[in-house]
Length: 456
Image 1: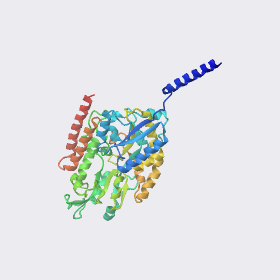
Image 2 (image 1 turned 135 degrees about the horizontal axis):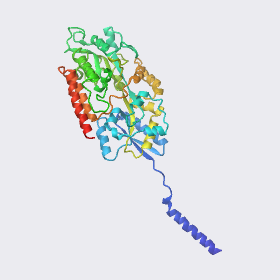
Image 3 (image 1 turned 90 degrees about the vertical axis):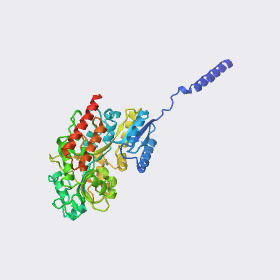
Image 4 (image 1 turned 45 degrees about the horizontal axis):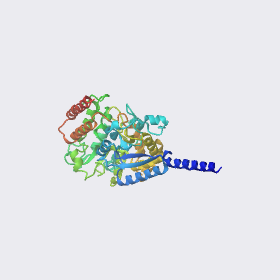
């Protein structure tokens, strides 16, 4: 009996020892997926925003055990080179957030299609503005879900209208008299030289203006052609033939040229740099009556402090088009992410209504969820009670969703730079005709398209 007990005890010791030695066989605790979120393609890299985003990351991490997120930051000026460096070093962040349409275009092949995630989760996009959803649906993939939008409106200086004894522009969309032609006629009365002559007078001295009726468009030239019935991309649907010397591109160029050099209601590039006291826009100094710009101009509202101002709808073009050029933010998941599904989960959490409201407060955008519009208008109106912020929301239905003014084209950066250089020529060289400038641009862009397709 003792021998049997001794044998059992020995077996027990051996088994216990083996189990202890084989502890490594037991399942190890699973490490959480670490999601790196790159901030730099859009807003969010200023010190206050970085601090706010770090707090949001802490909130996520404290409530999620299987996924942990971390924001990494870059300035806008360095975002492209920094992201390229990370990409080359196999250190690509899992996700870019926020990122605009231009940022998507810069690294178009890097972003994955999120439509399988949307389908698998039966993710409800009905609360997002339809044009904003459409904006992210490309021919071959869907990149992201809308985060925020920045539609355009016409800012106007009420004091200059009052001084001239003129009625303010329309306060809502639907007025058939509100066209770009009528805007120019109105701007003539609001353009003054140093002797008080307006642009309807034969005595106007266009070399000595101190007030302009029309500050022009604040965005890139590609925001203009759609207003005149053209394709903002300036090429055919196959991206193989440039179409910048005709149609909406030419009419838009002619409009800019004439507003500066013929009617004199808009400042030249030289006047923009010399006549506005160092301001980074022609409106804040109080010497411009009307100006079209995006809602991201909110960062400068505190500088509009020496006059009363409000906003008006986007006018109709000659063919009746009303186009509110719009910038938009989304997220984009990298093709090099080791955890794309987890990155999708982070993105979904970030765009839940309560979190999206906070983030849009940080980024300065209008929330892309319709359910948040009323509160956004209320919050903005509390700070600026005399401004019609509902008009910004109303402008979303007129956004240039497809194609968008920042959308991808072949040889993207070269085409973009060429187009902006042409627009600068229109504003600096009064001797150059719009047709000459657009002919030169068309030939240059055709070369870039041919170069791109020859490499494919």
